[in-house]
Length: 67
Image 1 (cartoon, rainbow, N blue to C red):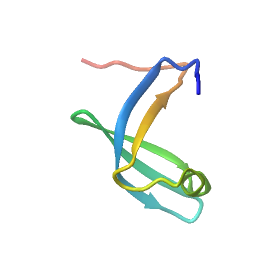
Image 2: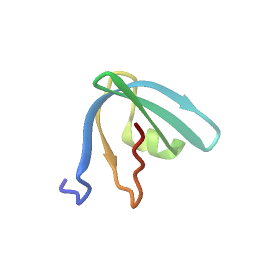
Image 3: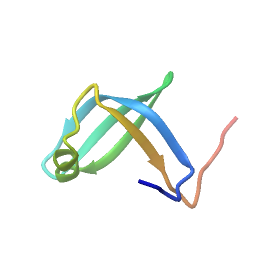
């Protein structure tokens, strides 16, 4: 699938914390962790599980940098 988002980071799901409606998905990207909050229904529809290889896609109008 082609996407316009340029920030695509390959990673591995390390944890999934399911709530009633939302889920927090932790993904290891190199030495860093990226956390995504998506709907529980999306986790189920994607069939996500710990250890799955995924691509973190970041599409944002604002990205902050700190030093």
